[in-house]
Length: 75
Image (cartoon, rainbow, N blue to C red; front, top):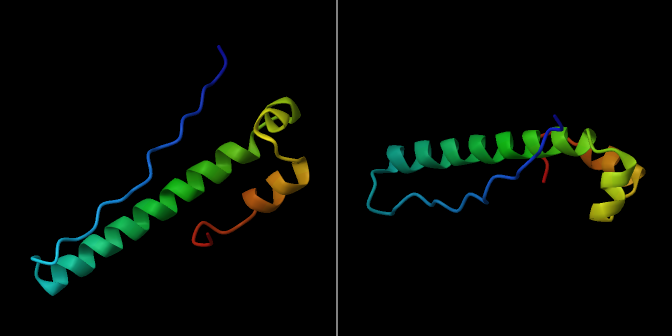
């Protein structure tokens, strides 16, 4: 059975200003970690795309390799 890949929705939760400063910092840290994990998963999935799928999304193998090799913290 072929694997299917889906992308997670973009994270847009912001820490409410009514939270204490430490709580805002922890929410911001959690959101950063979630964003990094999303990038890591997306780049791993991109690295597994075959040439046919790359053509479907309009990417070259070289572009795929460049993007897949980026560190998870780099946008």
